[in-house]
Image (cartoon, rainbow, N blue to C red):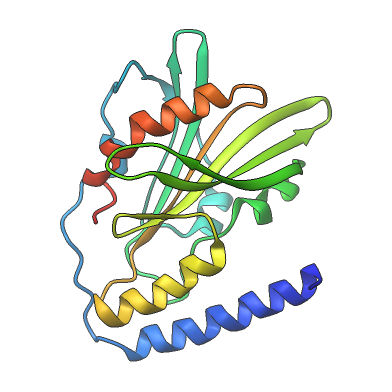
Amino acid sequence: MTLRHRLLALGGMLLAGLLVVRASAATEQLPPRDRLSQLPDRFSGWQPAGDVLIDEDSLKVLNADDYVSRSYVNGSRSVDLFIAYYGSQRQGGTMHSPLNCLPAAGWQPLTTGDVSIDASPAPVTANRVVIQKGLDRQLVIYWYQSHGRTIASEYASKAYLVLDSIRLHRSDAAIVRIVTAADDDAAATGFVRALRPVLRRYLPD
């Protein structure tokens, strides 16, 4: 299947899903959650090194209800964390894959694949992508998270959106992205293991 056909299929799936979501329960039932800006100052040795600013135009495209964009360090290692949370995806505000946004910023994917990271309370199923711009290479780990589950596939996340809207009366979800040096898988996986249990206060099960 060509990229064009995949995009058309995804667009059709998303449109059908949104129609089902809007036709389901009239009122969404969202549990309480803390704002992402209140992520703790440090956890498991990682501490913040400053927020990463996002310009207004990008925020409009993002169209998220809550987000955090922040750098963390642990000794000589560093990672950039980005999380965008959507309280409702009924009105067309849905998550976008980083693979759609990175080329616009000049980054090209070199390798893509799935990875499972052992973490508590459950393993994280994520995408592992090495990207390049000029001579600079970086490692990107990202996943979609909703109601306690982590999902690598964008298609699967849309399917869960429809199912959870019908079963749970919820369409809230988030995308979590970690970026670090291309040769530092240990930093990425270590940060994911430290972050995963913390997220439950901000991305409710």
